[in-house]
Length: 176
Image (cartoon, rainbow, N blue to C red; front, side, top):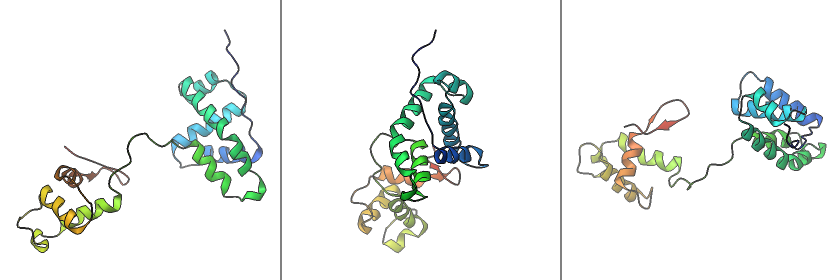
């Protein structure tokens, strides 16, 4: 039993060449490579079920990415024109294939603020006029307010920042 045909994806030469180059690269984020394969398969005329089997994704995921590509197609076609410059299309193409922003509240503290919060932990508390031997989260929060790093911060939040440890060269997560 066949269903309705999915919307047709058409690629001009330049976007196709960029997608094929992205797929053939020796290094690169696999999420982008997988999505580029998906778009190329859709442009080759495969339906969502065939693409899902070929790429190893769920049919609904293929449908979402096909729709997302089709929604961005006019913008990509405008960037593919020679008058706009060579750097515009690759940047926009990667932006279409990349993850959408996550939902939720934005972070309350920037990376710079967190570094400033952690900096006093490396110096003795006496240098800041604190009457404690090791830094405590409460004393660190009070020192952050004194230095103007954060308007208000709870000792628990400071404690979580102090517990953070790098788990790789790119990420850090709280322990315990």
